[in-house]
Amino acid sequence: QLVESGGGSVQAGGSLRLSCAASGRPAAIDSVGWFRQAPEKQRELVAAITTTGVTNYGDSVKGRFTMSRDNAKKMVWLQMNSLKPEDTAVYYCAAGRSLSPRPGLYNYWGQGTQVTVSS
Image 1 (cartoon, rainbow, N blue to C red):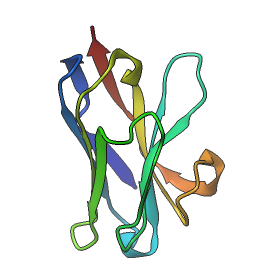
Image 2: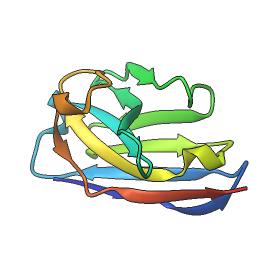
Image 3: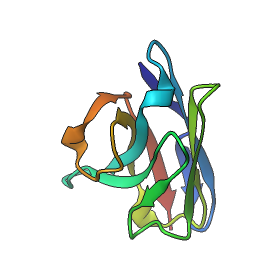
């Protein structure tokens, strides 16, 4: 089970930190991804991280977002800085086996947390 937290509303240029807590499954064997989905848009990869800390970021967030994880705590975080209105979406945490941008390759999903960035 994956549970996200930390979403909310912020003005453009602000920051938020999302958390994803895993339970019931050894987090050390999974890569974890953060995806987001805005209304009427497809779900897209924001960032993903392997068990050894290798990361993959979507082009639109490179240099602004940072993903990290603590395998012992079964926690994953997404630090989001310099937020823009176009970052507004529901953000999902997902567990998979690679850094793939394809949502279908991730087997476990959280319920999502809303991030709203106002201009």
